[in-house]
Image 1 (cartoon, helix red, strand yellow):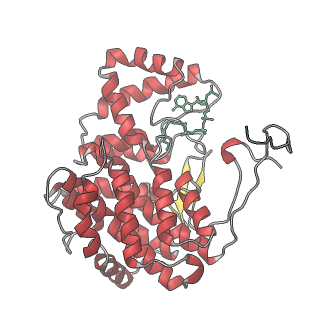
Image 2 (cartoon, helix red, strand yellow):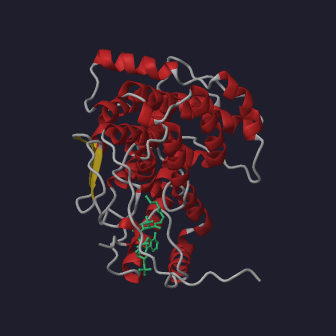
Image 3 (cartoon, helix red, strand yellow):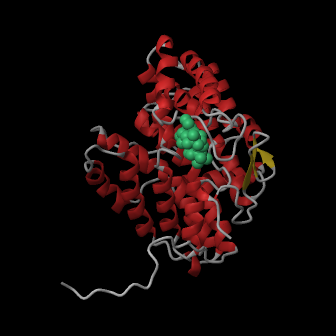
Length: 378
Ligand SMILES: CC(C)(COP(=O)(O)OP(=O)(O)OC[C@H]1O[C@@H](n2cnc3c(N)ncnc32)[C@H](O)[C@@H]1OP(=O)(O)O)[C@@H](O)C(=O)NCCC(=O)NCCS
């Protein structure tokens, strides 16, 4: 049996963590609608849910939050190296810097092969990872801009600390809640490319750090997590309502992709996009009216020029508009996505490790027929 290109439509594992119903425009974490969770619960509650399968009681929440706070600080030997990492790269790329910093952090914590550790130890690695990633990111961001890193405040929530340690000021409740809701919406999403990567690496019995590093690389691609910055850059490039139609038409005609549109699984509106549009409107985001105008023209043109492909707005189109309005700098858009998706990856790593078989598919060889005689060297 030959799998379709891009593994489209194939089910490759069982999971109890999340699922996406592309035709219905619905997705869920465990037994709850992800959109409803984003409306009603905190990031910490939803993080607890994907790890444990149930929402926390008050006591469980308090214990979980205390555990998160134990792990948010960057370990000293890594902290000393951050200024060096933040000085490397031309141009500097926060995602690449994070890779280096996180790799050292995983080594510092001595993460052992998933093959060799019990579920409780693996859960601690998962917590250490998801808790420290935002601090690594905001420290690197500040150092790169010549500022001192800031320690998270124990009284702030995870999302509030993310904004605080990036920007250096305690953010408004409105901005915190917008970023928190964005993070909840993007925490997990079935077998997307980075989650799949994390599970393939885990399936070899490798350590959690290696699986997370692979997932980080996967997420950085423009077809996956790299799109929100590009979607906002597209709005900038279009510039004005008069220019919209011509710009979009030329882009599609030239074989280019409109960032923030199309999805492998959703064949209707992405529910994350619908909620982010609402959020952007509530926040009175500076770009929201223009974004709505571009969205409506883009949908009409995609239908006309790419008939039958059912291309709709995806999560990335309004993500940048919301983050921009909440004060997140553009270079932190994909990293912000990562700070929540790392919770999903680590949940999947635990699930994979708990019931593992190495992932080892086949390929179809289509090169020149072998065996040809190996010529003697000239
Ligand atoms: C998300 C995405 C990677 C899904 O890719 P996919 O399922 O492999 O879809 P395909 O590449 O098979 O595309 C099918 C057709 O739709 C077109 N298409 C898909 N997304 C498009 C987009 N955003 N703009 C213009 N055309 C698009 C493709 O060109 C192709 O047309 P063709 O058959 O005439 O060549 C793709 O839609 C995309 O590149 N979107 C832009 C990037 C983005 O927003 N990524 C964030 C994802 S959450």
